[in-house]
Length: 253
View 1 (cartoon, helix red, strand yellow):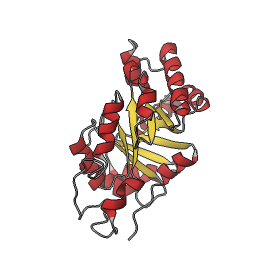
View 2: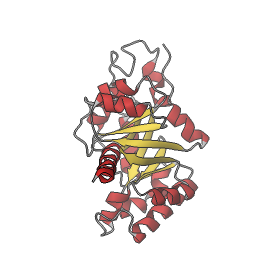
View 3: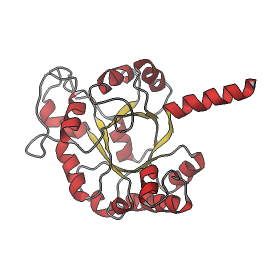
């Protein structure tokens, strides 16, 4: 069996915009439903949702029949956590709170086997299709897509250095944490935050790396797309559910 191709990584290299949804509800039926809605990617969030590395595997299995890339966000830039997610079959990871090039290099090392990195080797895993993928250890890095998240004012000042790290495939700006670091907690659309985000996106693009972002503010996202954002999280499952429920109630009350 050949190593599965990473359509998301290929799209980023080709400069194609990729639109996705954030998943915070760890329920396989929900993930399967959203996987079939035509988005380019969905992201399983273990940083701020009630799921861990092991819980992502059945959710990846639920999305597998559909032409969608499933991205996983670990809780931290933790090689043990990252290793488990890779073995469970993740090919695209978004690493939170990367502050500088050194931390970006640590993330790259976590997704690569020695001598290029520190990922532990296990043969009979979902990643290898339980041993069916020929020469998995030699070629796994070719289809692993590593995205790093810059989400503080300090991290934004390091964009150019982070972008130089070989093995970083995309840089994502997190407006919520960035707002907090700028003294505007809870105001991710604050004008100062918005300006910093747009400047960051342009700088990421100028550095030759695909930029990404998530926001529930659609006008914010349109502006981000114009600034060069290439992989764009346009909504969150829980927000979609709640907003739909509130809208329906409003029709009847």
